[in-house]
Image 1 (cartoon, rainbow, N blue to C red):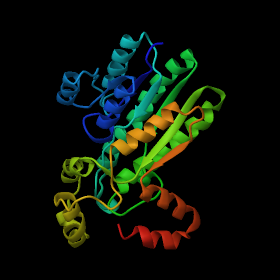
Image 2: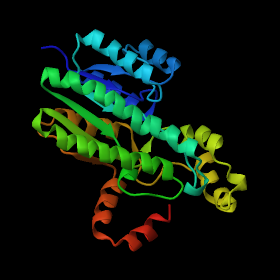
Image 3: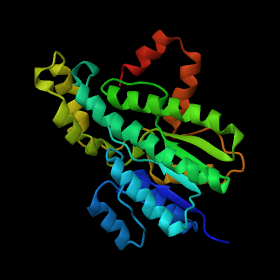
Length: 276
């Protein structure tokens, strides 16, 4: 039987990189896409097909997917929308451009690639769309408003799509990681420096005492942090389950926050989340 095929975005490091290796080891035909040509070249040197896909560049989405379909004779069994980034900062300090930029990648690009893949899956009669959300797609946290907004939007789109696909054999799934050991925080620094004028903020002292330390100082693992392999393990379950769940939580904080969101009054949940 032919190998099942999957396109994974955001494979330069962290969750995407680990997932690409885990699925290849499990026998999948993996297309490990990255935003930067240099990262694609590294994955190619490791034996992967690595089309360049930058969610913020519609042309790269079309060309990258075309490269995948050329290699699979026009089929694709699964898409793992994993690529995303964060722009830290207080909501009152986020200019319009910062939100536009993060939504281009975390929401609009994911949506565009998904809508291009869906006709392929319809034609072949099956497929799986798996979107990587976050515990911050369930609850909010200070300093993370832009990322939270993008993940809340992704969750809403994914939920709607899942319901709309009920009359097909295309399964739509969310994976919601909590703290995972990746360069994600480090990778957010350029976006923070580009968009947030923290020194002229009404919250300058709070930036100095909290966010800057979190961004620039390595204080070790976050409590309950898991390796990226934990997400790969759940991804495998979502791909192989005959009747996959709508949501898969990864890490204790995600499961705890999902529970607390259901049972706590908003005021109590706000007090808890405000601790950051």
